[in-house]
Image (tube, rainbow, N blue to C red; front, side, top):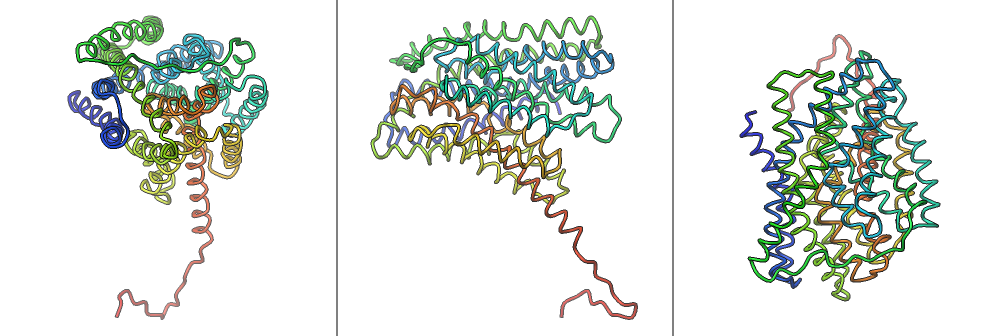
Length: 510
């Protein structure tokens, strides 16, 4: 595919993700939810920047981060130096996570934790679990037992945090969801494929799955541990942006935000660029064309990330908060939050390009026993339901633990009954479901609604939306795997029909 066609395809995918939300918001704001005209205009400009930024970012990430991950993973494994593999994995995990746009958006929305403290804590969590992932691939440790052990530790810590510092619980689980985003997932999966490619056994490809699953546990553990050392009282969230009174102010607001975001993105990408250049000189020695291709990809990633974050911070998030607040303040009509969130979740997941890849992957693994069409609808229903549950929590104050404990328990029990590859894909697919729009629009939407109903409970009731969205595929994909197992067994037990030598077999109907 030519670069021009690739760019067009990425813009088309980004538009398919963003435009359904824009249409739903426009219909509501022009019919029954009064919205400030300046804020609405800012949202439209932000939508355009989000589409362009997301398209450039995903293209740049595909051209740069995926080859870097594959090259480094392959080179590290050939070294056969375990301390080197683990040390580099730690540094790479931190570097790639710090540049994750979804994490940046989440950190900006958390009022009780400093942005950089949260980002670095999550990065260390990803780095440590990436080390463990490398060890798992090299020593062929079954994924299901690692997941069961890690989540046992997670929920032991979660119970203590729920009692002592409940404001950190939802943020911790949301951190695990946002780290499996468009920057981290391609890099980590490519790294896993690079490491697994050295192995020649039959399970090498199967073990390359599951890295994202393990790495998403790291942030949860890290933030739960941070809760024991953090100080400060819970805070409410104020309005995220000033009112736009005219078009000149709108232009100045965006122009002021772009240099600020450019500086942040450069600092975020700098560790990855420096690490790649050092590795290129010391070990990779890529030829000129592939090397320049990666450098150009990193530049495109930077430009796309700046546009994405600017559009999200100035246009998308403020209107999301205002919209949620207006709907929550409509008296008995506030329960419209639930069906509206379900509708948005349905279109967000339907427009997510990675979902279609996942559906085809499951169809191939099941040899057609589970069609991509059936998988698509199962996943869409699951994510839409997660958004509805999140709004139910905002309206009622239902504790997050009452949902995630049985949810994760079901997911972990299913790992004992489904093929290991389905388990790995299921836990990897949390990042597919909790895409960029979940953090940039749905989370502010929930925060705005909670601000209008119970402003003192934002940390406990609004946060948690991302983890609900990320949790549902763990159950859905594995249920599909269970259906595949049942169908396979039925096919194996089906009696064979035999015919006598002199029996006439008619192959047509009368």
